[in-house]
Each structure stands twice: as C-alpha cells, then as structure tokens.
Length: 294
Image (tube, rainbow, N blue to C red; front, side, top):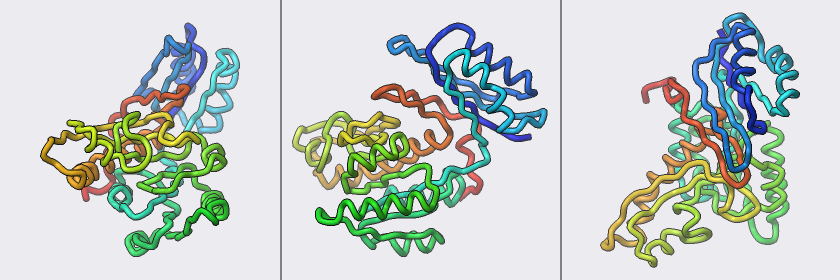
C-alpha cells in the first residue's frame, strides 16, 4: 500500500471536510492522520491529510479525480507521495553546527531528504561534505561579483532539480530576484527570537539589552531581511553573568534544533503560507522515526 499526503487551501465554508473524506473513502483510501485550521481573520481554510491507498489508486488518479471538488470549493489541492524525498540544496558559510546537524539527521534517516548539493562561499567544510559523498560547490561572493555568484548558485539549483534551499548559517544577503524566484522554497535560520534583534550580530544586541532569554528563528526568506514568515522558534535561558561568547555557544544547539524542525515540517507538507504568517500542523505519528538508530 502506498502512503500519500493531501494539502488543501481554500476559502472557509461548510462541507469541505465531508467532501474530502468522502472522496478519499470512495477511492478506498484510509485516513491515518488529519489536521485542519479555519482562520477566522482571513477567511482561509487549511487542511493536511495523511492516508493509505488501499485500493491501488495512484497519485495521478487521485489528483485528476479531485478536480470537480477543487473547482466547487475554489480549492488548491495537492497530493504527494510520502516515499519521494525532496531534493535539497544546503548553503553554508563559516559556522558549521547547523550543517553538521543536518548531515547527521540526513545520514540516519531522521530527515528524509535528498541532499543534491552543498554550496558555500568558503572552503571550510569541503572535506566534511565530500566525506558524506555529497557534491560541494565553493562560490565566492563579493560586492563586485554578487550577481554572477547568484547566477551560478541558481544554475546549480536548477541543474540538480532542487525543490528547497536551506540556509544553514549562510551569511550572505540574497538578492530580491533570488528570493522571488524561490519564494516559499528558501528556509533560513536566524540566531535570535524574531522579531527581536534582526540583522547582524543579534547575540551582541541581545547582550547589550540584558535579555534573560535568547533564541533562534527559522523562517522563509523574503526580500525583507529577517522578516519572512516564521516556521519554528525556540529559546534558551541566559543570565547577567554570561558573556556574548556564552550566548554564541548556548545558541548553537538551539539554532540547529530549530532549523531541523523547520526543514522537517516543510518536507512533510506541514507548513502553509498564510499571508505574512504560517500555519504549521503537528507531525504525523511516526514521522520522526529514523531509518537508523545512530
């Protein structure tokens, strides 16, 4: 039996859940997990359904068959095969903790993705990446060659068929053009609890304000720096006695965990854009199970 996921967005109205569940039941599909959200402020409805096709219905058949329901409700309905891994490009600069964490989770199957390339503007992590039998591209970025460098990065994305770019502490600001061309498909990790302390040196900013909590935020990238829709956040407590260097060390674990959670949510279709915000549904049972123990 094949396992699939259905994502639905449309204007909120009566009968959506009944229509979808009836459609799936009529095609011998067994729902294993379902989540929905009705945004009363925007009037939008969001739904994610995991199910098994027990009667042999294929993805194409299900996608074509739902067209009348989609037309009736003005619905965007997208099916995906849970067994197909999304192709991902990771971009990194000189801080490697998020990259190392993603590589480990990928290697044991805790993050079911297909890493098709790692791109960096430095050579620091070439050996680490190559030792994982992954292609490593060093694309130097300066003020003078920024446009050419981004063109090369996008060439790699296109040729590898990447569906998602993960900025694992990639410390270059992307152009508006790149953000727009990959809208909703670039995830960044910012080392502060946004919207506090945007931009450069957020730990230094936090230290100077004497905060008692520092955090990390994973969000979709937009043309506005550190203002994209937030996917995941977390914090760690600090004290008056700790230094900016302590903040950096304490923040590493939080950054890595928050980014991994955001990527996990995206690849499993749990994240829906809702204006400048996101709807993030809980993980389905068993979705955190690793292929290997370690």
